[in-house]
Length: 215
Image 1 (cartoon, rainbow, N blue to C red):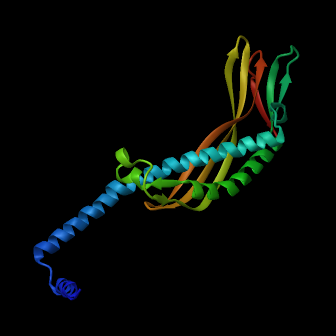
Image 2 (image 1 turned 90 degrees about the horizontal axis):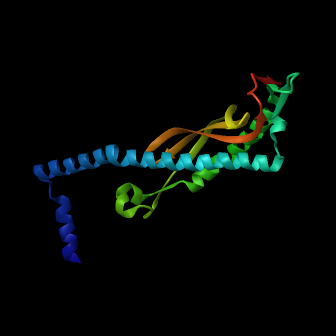
Image 3 (image 1 turned 90 degrees about the vertical axis):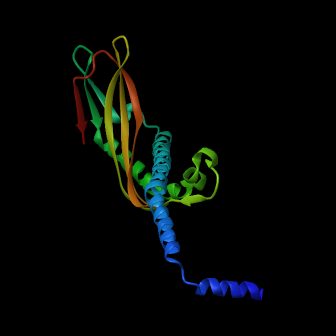
């Protein structure tokens, strides 16, 4: 024990040689460059992929829960106006119903997204160090959601051919969520967008020439 203590004291007191200092500085520089250009971009890319997947799942879950609970139908959002000949002349969208739907879904996302992303998103160390051999193994790098900066939703309307003289009218809700994240690779914001169909119907005849919105 005394010998080990004396050896430690000698090593501490012995000055480093110039070559040793240069070697240590070179190793430190290599390590810093590896972190900056190798490790941190990999961590950032993995975090973005995990956050995008989890947030998209939450957007789908929130919309599905609203549709299942409220029994929303195409007729609740759109009124088809017909011409004298019986054809569809216009599709009138009820903005009040759309805004109620958007309000409920965005409020639900504001409560779900920060907590779920923080709990669910983990980046295994094996995916960063040597993914070919250690993918999914090792400790996890945590991802912290600092805040949900914004959440917005817009209704989109699209028409597609569904058969002979038939047109499929689909209403989709495009949701954008922007998160501020704290990760081992630094602080950055990430915007996730997902479009989910909320209602659709088949229109027999020509596509409506007019698409109207009513308050």
